[in-house]
Image (tube, rainbow, N blue to C red; front, side, top):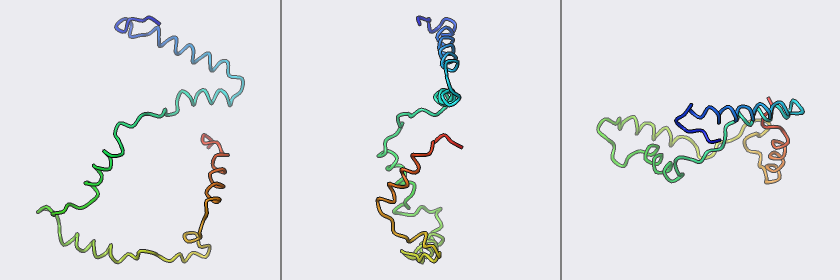
Length: 126
């Protein structure tokens, strides 16, 4: 529509969009279709990321790794203690659950079966 952007704050455009949305809802033949229309109005829409993966990596690499030289206000003793405690954690732990939940091997067919099961369910269901 040809609303002047400064005139009536584009009310005619907004009313047309609202009227079109109402007509979509009124023309819905099933409750399922009606809810799909409602969800198309309210669900989040994919947006382009505002930062690149490289920017995130650069920022978090600095934030998550200790500096090469510790600042004066940093508690060096506490860091040393935490390094010792972290060193005591084994590289591999034993899974002592009777069902071996955490050590049972899985293969690609297991992953495909699970993906198929997840896709068969509606992502919008409660």
